[in-house]
Image (cartoon, rainbow, N blue to C red):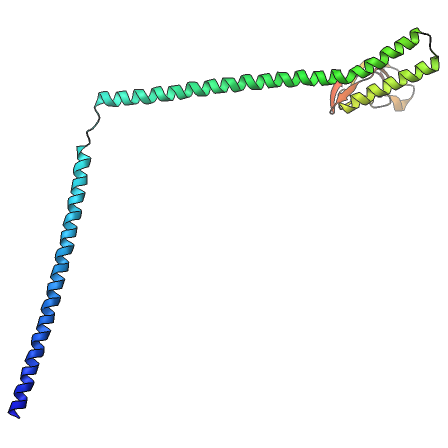
Length: 213
């Protein structure tokens, strides 16, 4: 029994030695890890300090250098302003020229449309000079008139209604007044001296009329 107890005590001692050895190894590893972390922190601190030193090494601009820097910036902005002014002036001239061309070309288009009507009138004049048939001449003139009205309508020009309508200063111009033949014609247009026209619902020429009173 005594021998068995001795063997057990020896085994326990061996286990304690193994455990103590493992604990020592773990403590040693922990100490090594802490040392490594401290070294990393020290390196980081050195890098931060070096960066701060580099920042501190940047020299501050003197008043003269700052003044030169501002003058260069002002000169740059002045050039950009002059460039924008020149660009705007070119844009203004270009749009003005385009507007003039539009007005010029628009007038040319209208005149070109009238030329066929002028040709018809000239043919009618030649027929009158040659003593043509009166009925044929009248029919020709009516066709020319219809053609001209069609051309005006295609350009949004239409006659203003006047005779029999209530007098309206927006469309009519009274050249004279005349006693109304009946009560229902008072304040109305009883005769049109010159027909008026409008374009796109805007008065092109007021109708000259006689108003009943």
